[in-house]
Image (cartoon, rainbow, N blue to C red; front, side):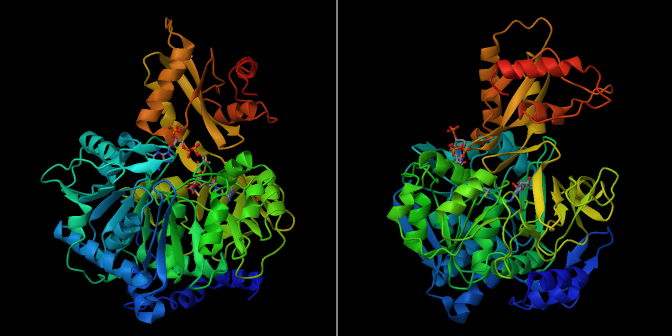
Length: 627
Ligand code: COA
Ligand code: AMP
């Protein structure tokens, strides 16, 4: 079917369209009521359907000819390990681990926090939760104890699953120590933890609370528990504009239907093919395209515990494609910028046979034109940028490889995905003209698979996403359609930044920076960075009478942000300034600061209190080599 026909039908007849897609899944009770609004006005999909995601992704394939096909391949250059689990082995281990969790008291609806490195056991734990109807919340291993504690308090897990350690390039991260610290910081206390002991660094277990993975998985297997399509499958925390992360809630039914559909339509992958998303299970890309979608579609997924470079070199991705005959490869542009930095001419590619590769997909941040052109010239396959968010769980726009791909345009995410009615609105909420930038919104209802609530705060779901333009979901991104209908996503319109494909809140960093005893006021902004896309920089006004050393202040603030959020925040630079540009009502003009730092043209708003503050800031930025 052509893209246009499929897209138009998905928008004009969403119920008929998604009813057909839902029929591709093995439901326990097939849905009859496809799309409804609940009493709070939230759109819900497949309301009377019943299924189990663990059954759809594992048992179903074991029962239908894929029992001996590899389901999960584990490739870990940092531990020099390669293993694999067939669908049968995966199903059995998941069923037994689910039995172990049940023995620890976990039942349908209970929450389980998973704080693990990139090991197959992370997938086993995730699927075990799904099998029980328990709600998992995976926390990225790069987050510091404070961030983990915030998530523990919000999700209130009965059990936490973790590991003794994770392994970064040349360094061991003591996950168990970080977990213990997080539990001591949290108000909510889990009843039990399960710890995977890794030989690279084992850890002591606290008697009565901590359980060894090996003992927990020695349990009687349990069958998949039927759940409603609208029951929560997982919570995934993401950065909003405030210090409190948002627990994005995704339900079982819509998620399974959307991801299965995406494997063919967005990625053009067939059952039996190998899919690699080089991301982390702690991010949405990992949830959707390492853990769930490949197995829902009967493919083989790869858990890669390594980096694009230095494990051991910039040929790592090419080796993976060759060794596992990967058909579709998905990562963040920053990863290829790292490859390009180490191997500018892509010479290492010549050492590998990548003939299995059909398409390269990039997301997590905009695929910048220089990286796009570099990849396009280097590789014999289409290079596809596609745009999505934690909230949507799958691509909102892309070049649909399973329909009729069109000629790409550098810098554009191409066309909206079927199901997503993407529009651009101007500041007054009116449709923007072609080529006019505005707020990118999605007309409700959104397709299956998108967030259905914020955990514990449904009001915040409405106020954050639905209030700005009634009838539309606010993506938080700015962008435009060009004359040919190509969508260009130009960056966030709020205080969210993207550092090496990791979504972070400058508001949260500001709260930490402002808590330093020498700081009177501050703004943290994201500035352009060649490798990581953006890096945070703090602009700080010190308190009257403060006589400290700016270099020491900078080091202290960097250490504070690292301790509170984690190393991934990459907060290093602080500029001490006398004034910050503000409106007459006292609001700091952060967007203006970003434009100055990025050397972009800007208009001085009429509401500015003192325009001369801008010249001052620009000159400090120039002195520090920022501009
Ligand atoms: N656990 C613990 N620490 C972690 C971690 C994890 N899972 N992931 C990253 N960190 C640490 C790193 O070790 C580093 O610590 P350091 O400051 O002590 O050196 C810090 O966090 C910053 O990490 P990162 O921003 O990843 O920088 P890097 O220089 O190690 O690697 C890239 C740069 C581009 C190679 C890497 O960021 C990458 O592969 N990015 C892909 C991003 C991605 O997958 N995004 C998901 C969306 S698709
Ligand atoms: P996350 O929720 O971590 O996936 O981050 C989502 C945000 O990353 C989006 O709101 C965008 O700002 C940005 N993003 C992700 N993919 C793309 C893309 N392909 N093009 C432009 N921006 C992107």
